[in-house]
Amino acid sequence: MGTIREMFRDRRVFSWALYDWANSVFATTIIAGFFPVFFKEYWSSEADAVTSTAQLGFANSIGSVFILIAAPILGAIADGGGARKKYLGVFTALGIVMSAGLWFVEQGDWATAAVVYVLATVGFSGGIVFYDALIMAVSPPDRYDQVSSFGYALGYIGGGLLFALNVAMVLMPETFGFSGAAEAVRLSFVTVAVWWLLFSIPLFRQVPEPPRTGDTTSAVAAGLRSIAKTLREHRAHRMAGLFLIAYFFYIDGVHTIIRMAVDYGLALGFPSDSLIVALLITQFVGFPAALAFGLAARRVGPKPMLYFGVVVYVAVTVYAYFMTSVIEFYVLAVVVGLVQGGVQAISRSLYARFVPAAQSGEFFGFFNMLGRFAAIVGPSLVAVTGLLTGSSRLGILSVIVVLVIGAVLLTFVREQEAAPAAA
Image (cartoon, rainbow, N blue to C red):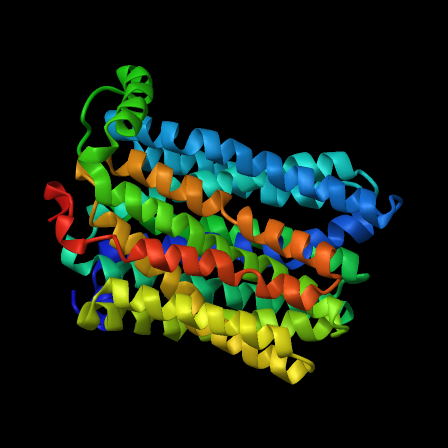
C-alpha cells in the first residue's frame, strides 16, 4: 500500500478516505462558502450588520462548545462499546438531514437557520472524531502519513468539485433554470446533503469496526472515567499530550488564516467574486499537495514536513501584510493550498503514532476537540492588534505569534516514543 495507485485499489483504504470526499463539501459549500453570506443577506437581512454578525457568531460558538465538551466523551464511549461506525453514522445522519433542512428555512427566520446550522455543524464535527479513529482499522502505523494525506487529498478535490458547481449555480442561476441566486444557494445546501450521503456509503460497507473493549452500556461510565484517568495520568502518554499542546497553537494559526483570509481581502477592497475564485484555487491546489506531503513525510519524516508547513504559513502572513492586489491574493491562495491539507493530514498521522489503539476514539476526541475548537488565540490577536494599532495589516501579521509557539513546542515531541500498541 505504498503508492497512490495501491491506495485506490485497496477497498478499505479507499472507502475510508472517500468519507473525506463526502463530508468536505459541508466545509467548503456551507461553512466557508455560502452560509455566512446567505445568513446576512437572506435570513437576517432586516438586522443591522453588527447584530447579524453577533447572531452568526453565537451560532458558531454553540456548535464549537458542544464539540469541545462532547468529543472526548463520545470517543471514549465508542471505544468501550466498539461503536465507532455506529456513532459515525449517527453524526453523519444528523449533518446530512440538517444540511438539507436549510432549504426549508424561510427568509427572515434567522433563529431557525442558526439552530439548523448549529446541528449540522455538530454532525459534521462529531463525525470526524470517529472517522479519524477508524484510520487504525485500515492502515498499519507505517502508512498513516500516506493514508491520512490520501483522505485529505480526496476531501480537497471532492469539496472543490461540488463547490465549483455550486458557485456556477449562484453566479449563473438562469443557466441552471433557477429563478435567482437565492434559490440556487438554497438548492446548494441540498446538493451537499445528497453528496455527503452517497459517498459515505462505502465506508460503512467496507471499513471494519475495530474490536470492542467492553459493552456499550458500561462504556458510558467507563468513558467518563477514562477521560479523567487520561487527564490525571498524562505522563503515561506524555508525547501525545505534548503534541496536542503544540498542535493547538500552530493549528490555531492555520485556522485563523483560513477564516480571516476572505475578510482580510474584503478589508483591502478586493471584490467578493475574486475571493470566491481564490477559495476554489486553494481547494484544487490542495489535492495534489496533500498527496505530495504524505509522500515527502514518508521520506523525511512527519516532523520536518510540519516544520516546513508552519514556516510557509509564517511567510504567508508576512506576504499578506504587504499585499496590495487581487493577483497577489491569488498567489497567496496557491501557497496556502500547497500546505494547508498537508499540515492537517500529517498532524493527524503523527498524533496517531502516540495513540493506544484501544483508546483511539477517546484520544482522537481530544485531538478534534482542540483542532475543531482552534482559532481562539489567533482571531483574538488579530482583533486586539487591529484595534490597538488601527491597522488590519498588523492584525494579520500577529498570527505569527501562535505559529511560532506551536513550532517551538513541536521540537520537544519525540517520534521514537510512540505508543506500544501503535508501534
